[in-house]
Length: 396
Image (cartoon, rainbow, N blue to C red):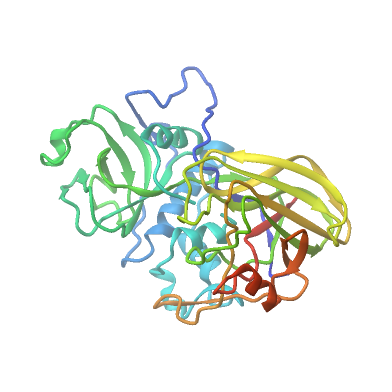
């Protein structure tokens, strides 16, 4: 088994599912303004140092806000621990940095971080971002930091240019004046963002970003302490790979030799031929015998936006020895995969994957076919090896 992680805090991505705990007068997404700073969580503004590690630093702050906001626990996470978990030089497979010298400035995408946590994605309406802040405690967002059309100590505006930096959005103000953005914004309203350039940057490490700015790759994390083990064959997620698709419904099956109580199954949803779908995504998960002949448990689930999700079971399912997990991706969705190895994945890292016979299968014309078999790849019409699908099994 490539991945068997003790999970004191298991991380999953649940994008923008709204529902907020009610207290005396709970904040709501239609409030004119809001800031997580009012809750005095004490999440520090960090200095990431050289360019490169912004995704890691924004994700670290997002996790800390979520743990405090949803679990009521004050946990400090070291960004370098997250970098090592995602790309440490001691790893045998997956995203691997060439040198420990890169630990302080490692460039990683959202996908490397998410899968390392066993967890992304795209643009969302302001109301959805507000709901995610209220429920999860902040959302990561991609911006263009290099060539904004306007930036001063407190305010930031850009409507074009490539996304090259990641920040954490922790609040908003619908009445923040458009005049603060140097004549570029046509309407009031701004996001409160926490950066990772230290507290001498901006307003003690924070700035206001106009609602009209181009922000992308909006994602939030949900932390759970209900699981103790996570197993998966996939060493990472190759978001550059087209994935696997056999039509309207794509059946993927993984065979495991493990015992315990299964509490849920995780996977990416919303991958399509256009990479990401902003339509609702549905999936069916089955726990089956090792030869796929009998179904032990079956559960359907749907989610409003793409991302890495865990289909949680209402009751734990006991398995003893070999069993299989079948995931059925509906609505023409593609299966996210780990993809082929790449010795020069980035200037800092390589990416190592492998697949063994009998691990992962795809159903073609009612027949289960082994994904390690070159004949299966030919029948699927794939130019690149998908290797193992991105599926996790969570044990309590």
